[in-house]
Length: 234
View 1 (cartoon, rainbow, N blue to C red):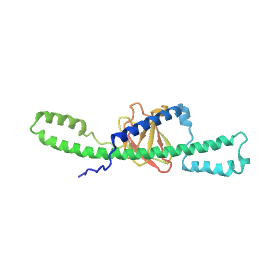
View 2: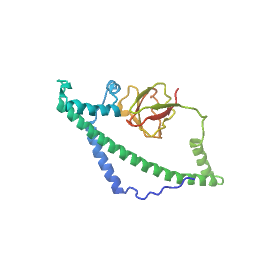
View 3: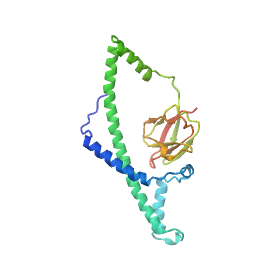
View 4: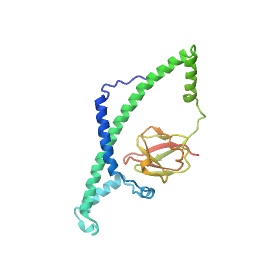
């Protein structure tokens, strides 16, 4: 039987307000810096994983900073160096935000766990009371119909996706959930859609896609771990 997890230091109202205020400030900044890509630009983006990131660093060290004759005369070295620093700063911000996301996700999961234990206790008592109370019985039947009616089992299509890989799938059944079966975070977008509408699915969770998303682009946002997912095809 599941047992409740003790929350020793729940977020206070003041702490929550501070987080919300800081998040709002960050949102304002990121909105100003936001780059809206066209479908063609989004599709043509170069995938830069761990190996390619290392290549950029080595080229900067071996040529831009030393053997400068290898650098095209049309390339502004000062701008290239600024790009290197800017990318490093962005990666630092990305890592911090991802850490915060993972920490908040754990808080949410623990909260859901504890609440589900109490909810199950209520449902167990409901089934006893329903035997003698029509109102409770009718409400129980409605919930049973909504949550405990099982459709016939079907098997989805299981896929693996490498580090930083982008995969296009056609013929998806959007009425079935998209399940992330590994720890990596995946990003989903309908083919030709705006990157602003992309859906991110955390590890070992699932998401229901918009009904018009029959053809999708799946991106493994991790540059260090392979991922996996299950989808249902039409």
